[in-house]
Length: 77
Image (cartoon, rainbow, N blue to C red; front, side):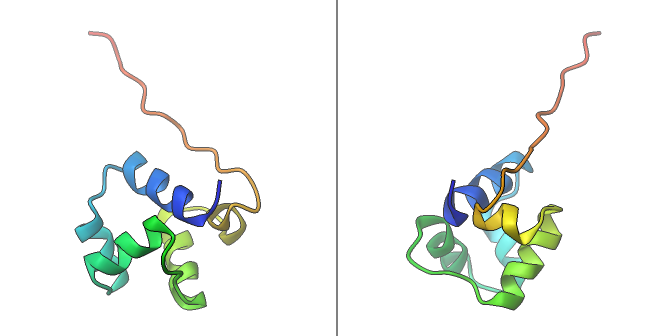
């Protein structure tokens, strides 16, 4: 997977809307959309902030190594 796919996957895994991620990164929702569509890339500082925000390495975020996202488990009543 590449950066844009990883970003979208990480955001959706945490159930975060583009608007919320944009606010956390101090960018517009349109910027997050461009990152996820692969039409723009964040600068180094934003890449580092995104990796820290999602608890992954920059290599994982950029698709240079695999990301292990744990799926939430359902507890039976």
